[in-house]
Amino acid sequence: MVDKFIVYIIYLLPFSLVFSRFLSDFTISLCALIFFFLLIKKKFVSFYKNKLILIFFIWCFYIIINSIYSENVLLSLQSSLFYFRFGLFVLVFYYLSNKFDNFLKFFCLSFFIIILFLLTDSFLQYITGNNIFGYAYNGVKLSSFFKDEEILGSFLSRTYLLPVLGYLINNKRLKYENELLLTYIFLVFFVIFISGERTAFFIFFLNIIILIFSYRTIFKKNIKY
Image 1 (tube, helix red, strand yellow):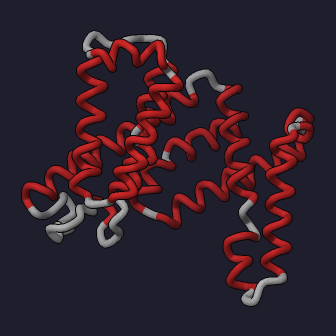
Image 2 (cartoon, helix red, strand yellow):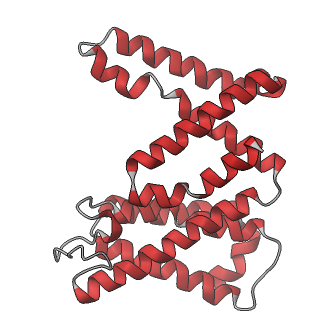
């Protein structure tokens, strides 16, 4: 019951990342806290023996010690004291993906839905000057649902491949696979381009290169196409 509760919360994470920074951080912290108690209760020995996990928590301890000896202790501890929650959140993903066969696929699907909303809203804002919530386009950078935060391109460049990975996890193939994949990537590319974020532009192409080298056999025919 607890496991399914965490799953449903995580499925809402992509939406909270767009609409509320507080909710996204709360989601990560809540999942990490619940999983921490699961680790104690169920005694997952394999997690305790994993060297990468041990190294990560040693790193967390190290940055906390550095914060204590910094000039502004309280300010430094704000970012380092609970940094371990991100490591626990990664463990949550590892745990749930092993327990539920379709967990990663549906998580990627939730990202695909929010990215489609962002792309549609971005084109609307670019063409009409306002998005569906009335947020105005300043003529320089698109913001879509992010309002005054100019991070649309940054968000898309870091998340647009998750739906692609979710599709690769699924063994079923679509009829117009090449056309749909390239159309999706082109739309994301165009929105990142008109968002005016140069760093996001670089990350977009870097991710494409990494994906091609990671899935050479699958993307070989797409590159030729």
